[in-house]
Length: 160
Image 1: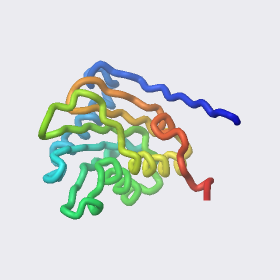
Image 2: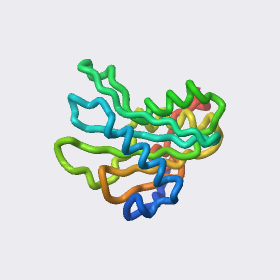
Image 3: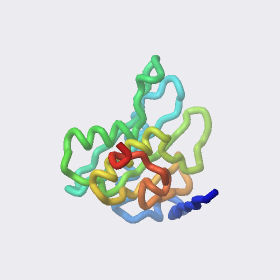
Image 4: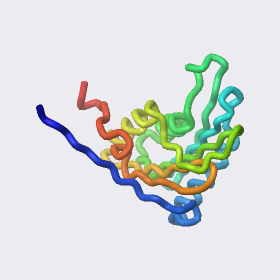
């Protein structure tokens, strides 16, 4: 038997004021998107903002539906919109913020598995990592240098 060992490294910022100025602004846009999320069923709002290589910012928020599988997460809302509007532009950074209407979220909330897979598709296609910054409503911000730090065994076009 052989064993495979992997590790991930995340940067931890005490709060968003400690982020680089450009990322502070991006996180502010994610928070604004979060506050506009449509989450009447879960009361869990998520916002995402992408900084593209052309300095455009694309935002997304979770959009729920009474038929639960029909909704879409904030990260995929943003990344698919970026792919549709700016198909040849690389994503330089992603910021994510989550908030519950039922309790305070003070710990960083990472993207769900489906969103990690969607982000990996864009990262593989652009042939460079997408730094992912994520936080709750307040408190620490985590930064993954690449989605591979959050999803080490990605399934991509090379597996097909």
